[in-house]
Image (cartoon, rainbow, N blue to C red; front, top):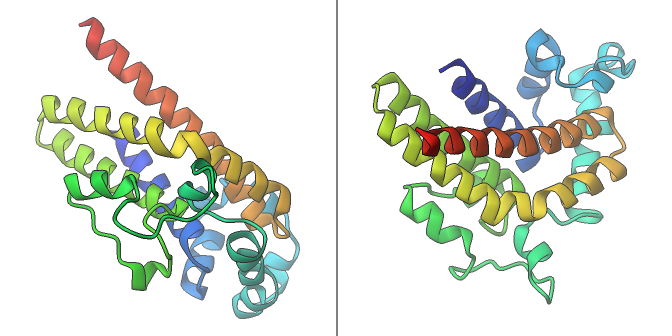
Length: 209
């Protein structure tokens, strides 16, 4: 249960950071929650973090870097990486939409300010959605449902996030101009690969029983 709750929390945190600019409340939470700040070792040692106001940090450093990493220099959409023509698929033909619909996940484009459902932040949010369902099934002792949900999680990672997100995150880490996004890229990459391994191991163990 503890492992699943940790996965719920990490997918939620990464989805929020990758999807849109930070606000003062989010930046304060990262700064003041020691457990969260430990995920950002470079940020933790960054002098401006404790020398400047949150408003100034966001306006002068953090949010311009987000724009740099998601609009100006990099493209955080799966279809850009997997299509031969490198076009972003904004319509219903996007392959992630079928999985979203099958598991009652709705994309709020206005809130996320994304142009397509295969944005990296939305795909992390979908994994958060699945992990929440897994957590609920664990609480209710529905172990068959837990196994089924984990199989869906692994399927989504293998068909989608693991196929393209590592390349984007490596580029994000290289292009980052602030320690926040440098650390976020490293954290997301390591967590994505470790969660893939975790799910593989869990499903292998289940199949051996």
